Length: 309
Image (cartoon, rainbow, N blue to C red; front, side, top):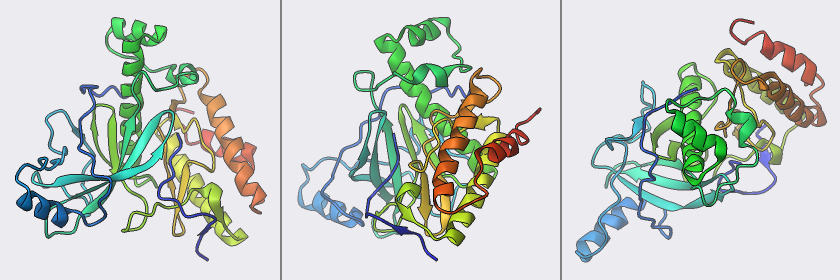
């Protein structure tokens, strides 16, 4: 039985791996009134109006971009001549805004990406950063002091850490075959990843909005346990797991929203975060008829997957 979303939404995404990169945000020209495929229309517009804006060339080969793990999926457009077209905001949140981006070449099949831009220091809310950031370190003591004291510079550094942490965890999970979006690239505080949804830009629904019979719910729970084992095997807890940051694409479950992934050994509260994840997600499954969705059993199962335990 296919999962039936209660409402039609375009994207659902709520809200140490030091990667050297510039935390400045790349500029992308926004063309939010265009629709897939917009590439041919853009080329025609350029030919009719020589003074029109230059195309927003793909940043995949930008000198400061950190590209996703290999092997690169066949669907991803990696040509240096490709153009990125912003098709509009999919979700705005206190921590990040997510846009739908079409990347492609004129006359060729484009790909759709989700571009997650972490908010700047003047917008982000940092009331819950402290617990997640325990166990993470930066190389320079000046930067660590700025982050600890939450100066404007420190808050911008933290935004960069959120982006790089999510990119690193997604990369690690994708390489072992876990059910997560492919992380395409990281540039500054912008993370571009696989868009999980239909070719016309309709995002997969969140688990929270899915009506599932008991058989489908049990299958989704088994899929979730598998991806959480992969996460624990890498040494992490999700840190903010709920039915709102799990997507259901057809009958396939995809785990999203991992910037706050908690180092289970390095963070003193790591196992508390893991237990909270188990309680939160098992609540949804238990309410949908999955009797085996026990927080205690899931916690014990995941503990056995943590390296060294």
